[in-house]
Length: 496
Image (cartoon, rainbow, N blue to C red; front, top):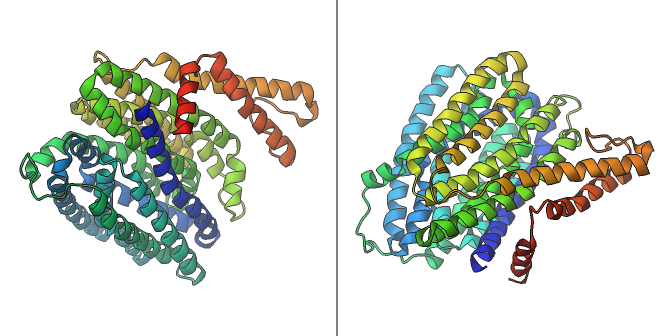
């Protein structure tokens, strides 16, 4: 019970920190959309995608590995942390040198080149910040990570809004982004040094050799690099094939997935130290924890995905700029279904790491990447941003399936039927029953199976949404997706 409470507490703390920033960033996005237009949003999306790929390469798969190793031996905190930083800074320098060459050869305009190169500096700052995150997670001090995220969000929002209003455009956003990352480090490093450790030069295992750590992290490096490429390369390919404007429309439509996809990741970070300890004691206990984690996370994200699909139109129009981004609505409706696929992968990824099956991560990352590249090459020329959205969802499905496949035959594989099928069945049943009730009781609303009544005012919209939400726990209980022991656990978590 204590383990489940820690997982819930840590997930909430991480979510509060990160999503406070995402909420502020949404309002900043609303301001930037009419200022930058499709071309500017496309450039911003391209810069974030390129930076994201380089960040993953420079991290070298050492994030979860650092958390795992420190969780096992906290006396080794400083040797592991310092060696991780040296590896990341070395690879970041190589990546940035490559970016300079690519920018020179690409023929970009001066502004485009300046934006991408400035954002590339973030890989040095963020690589350091992510190493601090890993240390705090290993010591289960994520409240300090959350505090640093909130400070970073306030800096980004305040400076970004100010510099956009002052007419600095996309360059103002870039500088605000860099300043917010520095602010996060300035808050997090002193707290980390004070509340974690011990910070001794050599632990019981002696010093940590860079080559040794790189050898341990190499499978994870390949896996995370392949995974990031297939999740970010679509924007780069779209810009190369169709141009910056189409990239902007795609980037606007991917916002919901890009924002919400972080919640499963936070959940995975929060429960991974507990999963590691369970795995050392009993594979069966780790499998039961994995099943409950998978079931709970899908119970949360599947209805969110359905709701976002229904309200994609109002979300896109809220950002403004007339009808320039109307095509982003369909992109969002398609892309959001990558969220539950990613949630499955996150949980299964942590179970695989607990089972010490990192050797499979390379193939798990490689195959979805090749699928994504092939699909994008076929679909983008014909279906532009719609094709890129479909390719993303299919790639995430392949990734989830491969995680499950490589857990087969181990004692760590969680029971999957109830965890995977139950939340989807409960969401479908609650919506179908809700739509049927509304058609019988209020036929003038013309509620069908395709979506919520968005054009009839707040009343019909809220009644339909609340009815579906109220029926959902009933369907979860009726389908035995959630049972009495789960309710007791939730009550215990609430008291804790």
